[in-house]
Amino acid sequence: MHEMAIAQGIIDIAVAAAQREGAQRITRINVVAGELRGVVHLQLTFCFGVLAEETIASGAYLNLEITPIKGRCRECGQTFIVEDYQYVCPGCQSRDIQMVGGTELRIRDIEVD
Ligand SMILES: [Zn+2]
Image (tube, rainbow, N blue to C red; front, side, top):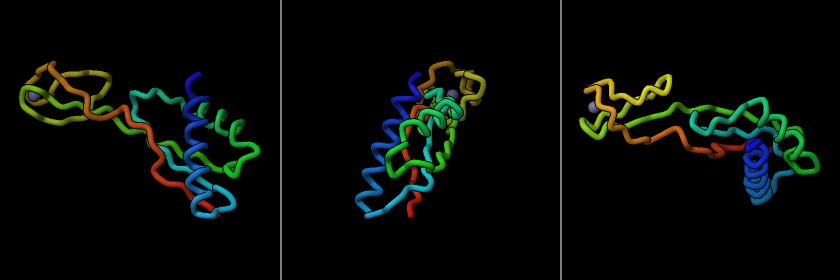
């Protein structure tokens, strides 16, 4: 279950950032994850809840925003959103596609008290 490792990473970063700001408690964490990461929201929320106990992130709301897979055509240079895992350029039908989005995983921001 890779959500456990992801949740731990989120907590480590968020707690460090909150402590730098002198915050007492984290109330919300907004996470951006690319679709290719295959993060299961329910599992991530569960892991986060377990791991956040005893930290200042305990009880924080974990908001997960999934960003779409993006590809760039090596033939015509068009950038487009890949739907249903169809790696075909909508402009020229080329299958020579470079992935340019969908693998990111980052904390966009956190809200603290
Ligand atoms: Zn193309």
